[in-house]
Image 1 (cartoon, rainbow, N blue to C red):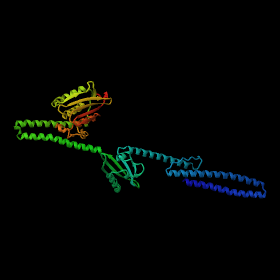
Image 2: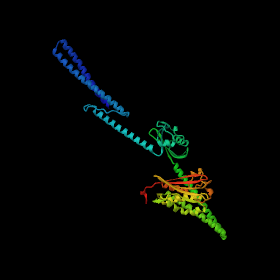
Image 3: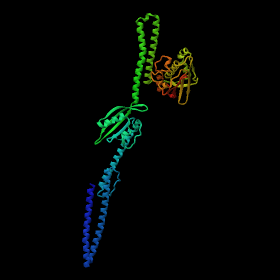
Image 4: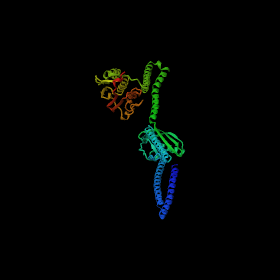
Length: 465
């Protein structure tokens, strides 16, 4: 449109200039005739006409140059708009015939810039969101090149992914994941699978490879989510049920077996009757302890209502130790309470009772005859500690890392003591300390003994209840 209008204007000006030129020729002929005839009046008239023609021609030439310049600017601006390149606005005089066209192009250019900026902001926001997602994301084009990858993907692949376009095989080394992507390229159908990646630790990814059809092309979107923790929790639940079933089966089988033996006639033998009833009673206590420990773990995991209060720790420890004095005396074990008389802590009494009870009970079970148990205390501005040290046979280093697993027993050190237990005591302590925001550590040396250290965070006074 601008080209047609411009050409029309230029053609009009050109015709006007041509007309003036023809008139100039006619005037020159008239002037020559006047000179030849020595006609002074005609000569003056011709000169006046020539001056007028020169002025008009000059004005037409200036208009022609201005129109030509504006047309070039309009053409450049139009080309920039079509190519989505930035262009400076074009300002013309209100009386200029191109005024309306220039204003329309300026408006179009402004809208295009606003839309481009909006698209750029949207893309930036989208990239920011994708980069912050807790899942790995990679976009692969139809040429098998990576055109986008977020930081999480680089972390999961343990690979520094280049921002430049490059083949995806440069980043992915997992054979199962490569095969999954190749299948989607071949079939043009989305696929989903659990991919196992073996490195320093085994990791399981829930992987979706999505085929995205575009207008005349396609992209492949790879989404990876680490479900290793879910797999581990599921396996822990399976192991817990299996171990709990095994632990329950032992006392139940013993109770059932000895009861049937008594019913089959053994009850008539007084000696056998007493012996079997003692075994049934012992196994019943073991079964009750196991059920109670399982319920305790369930209670902790479902959340417990803590009631914090200020406790004199030395007095509290002394009161708890009364329950274990007879058991310790039977093995000639001495229990020493080294907690300072002035030590006061803010804690939940039930949690502290369970933690201390399990640690002292284990210290007695796995101690040596005539051994010792030493209970100590320390504190700083951030936490306070309770230490329970025994002089038992100690724990092998290979067993220390698994000591807090449910139903775990160290075969070559702890179980040689032949003591009863559910195998859940230390795991309960670990659950309690996690729930309280604390930690538990163990230091042990074979032939010397073990020290269990529980560390509680300092609790503000305003949480007392």
